[in-house]
Length: 281
Image (cartoon, rainbow, N blue to C red; front, side, top):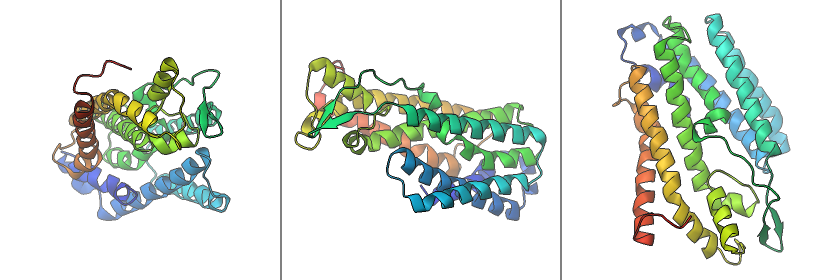
């Protein structure tokens, strides 16, 4: 993913079904690709800190990457409405980070997980993109360069494409890391269902000594996660069509297709495991 994200502005231009895209020079796309990568690197470093695994010596580098990202965008001299959108997305990113820092964590005592006094609230699935939606700014600069205002139908649809697509990716990432997060006491949208199920059934959770219990509970709840990912990717494809993005382009293939395949495999595994639709959680 770290390599592919560099090409998102390029793939976005290639997917545009607009003959005027020839006006977007390769040199501009190269600048946008590099700008995109700066933000991605910064987000990765900050995420490690939010998860309690950050390395202090990397924090100045994260700040430098974010500064380079913003500098790269402002040097494009795009319309004011574009930069207002950028300011909103960056402010929302900061608010999402703040909410994550304040989210309760599980206490671990002698390997066992202790239930929190209250379960943390989680945003709706579509809001899971708040921490990464600023990554849409570099691709959207191409539309702004073509004279498409932020409030135009195409630009709003393109932003929603990224909103749904990145939300699906975040949910898939949480599902991939559910066990590691659980061992560290992190509560995510992916492991919260199994935690609630364990509490209802009064099942003690000791991921190190008895990993089979949380793994079985997660397998039973995975169907719901897969359905959410499928719904988000379907909405992303719909918005891509409204934005004039070709479905055969590499952008949709690289961002959405792996998520859709993973969701389908999850459904298949759950059916093999239970032999019936999920009804227990």
